[in-house]
Amino acid sequence: MLDFVFAVDDSVTWHMMNLLKNRSHYSFLKLFGPKHISNIQSCGAGIYYNTLVQCNGRMIKYGVIGTDALIEDLFHWKTLYVAGRLQKPVKILTQNENGKLQAALLSNLKSAVTAAFLMLPESFSEEDLYMQIAGLSYCGDFRMIIGEDRSKVRNIVKPNVSHFRKLYSNILQECPQVVYKHQLGRLEIDKSPEGQFMQLMALPRTLQQKITSFVDPPGKNRDVEEVLLKVAHDPDCGLVVHQGISGIVRSSSLIQSSKTILTAGFKKSVTYSMKKMYKMTKGYLRKTS
Image 1 (tube, rainbow, N blue to C red):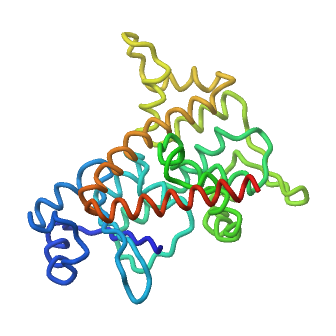
Image 2 (image 1 turned 135 degrees about the vertical axis):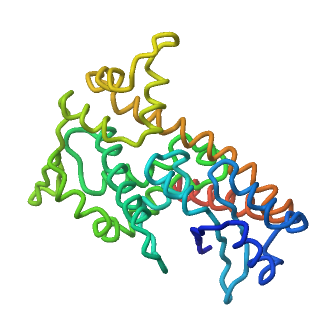
């Protein structure tokens, strides 16, 4: 199933026009009009999905997100829902000249590399890096336990290494903390406390806050920089970062999945869930055979 995301400046107007053209794409929420649909969209990850839509002989789903909400997620990882999707190779069909959005897209990729560095060992392969990046948005996602193929990350990366390389090569070449040993096909990063502190300080704001709340005991109220300096000296620094990301993803994935019952309707929700369960079971059987 093809997955589309539309970033729109005015969600109410967009849904109003889409209801006139494609009313059948919507669940019973179409009865309440575009403003109510836009209010539902703003909950959780800020995206509204119409799923299991037939289009030119293909089954598609498409999500609608406000441009401002998208930019905030890309810069700050507020939910890491759409930002996580855009850390993987995608095809941008059309894009207006929004300089802030373009900067946010690049910032999101740099943040993904930084977070992955913190969770990887000192030496790793290029594929290890892409596996770590592709897995960021699935950390803490309950659907990876029930409803998703557990081989999903590997299935995303393995056939698309060249696309990941194209997406991240410039960022890696410009990063002073990584050394790429071409002959060995290995990358090495600075795992000193000083190096890790620099990486922690470069993480998106929401992740820094999650890490701080996780590490800082109640009542201490130390500033973020002080807490991150402590984490940089922690041998389990990568685990702390992983737990911070999991905290972001867990809540957004739960709310977004709950929204699906409303946005897709009961029948489509059941059909979509069954398809996910089938893929998960198929992946598990393939792994054990």
